[in-house]
Image 1 (cartoon, helix red, strand yellow):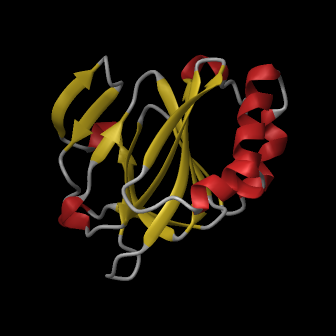
Image 2: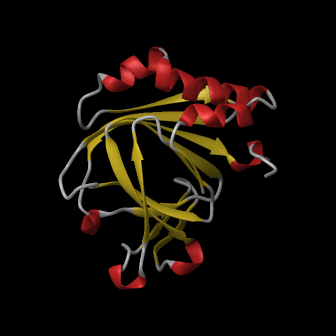
Amino acid sequence: MLLFYDARKAFGLLQRDNALLCLQQALHSALDGTLSIRIETMHVGERNVEDIGHGMRAIFECYRTKPLNEAFCESHCRYVDFQLVVAGQERFFVGEAEDCAVQAPYNEERDLIVYEPPNMRASPQFITLCARSLAVFFPNDVHAGGLYVHDESDIVHKCVIKVPVGLLQLGF
């Protein structure tokens, strides 16, 4: 997992080739361009999906955060999730796949593995994303977003970009 509290700091990593430049432009537009206006004016429950090229797709959504007991824990095999909060704030459960119990095995069509909700006795890890924050979840990263930050619901406007694993060779 990578975490940028200001997504603009990630842009320099994404200028190596045309595919990553396309990803960088989509993230930039979601923060400061024409996409940000569309995302910020979405109503709760709205969700749009767009192909942005190079096998990537962008999901724009608006929702209310929920309590931990309603967490949907997931990971993916073929895609890396770039999750950018445009407005609002949310908490994420994060964990390693080998530390989480599988609830539903890999669904190839949906590129999805579903895990049991986090067990509070197992000391789960959490991160908080606020506006302009970007979290990058790789295939081994179990994550559940959209969770309450301060025991109350917040409205989140978000852009999730699904990037094929093969496009990312970040070389840290």
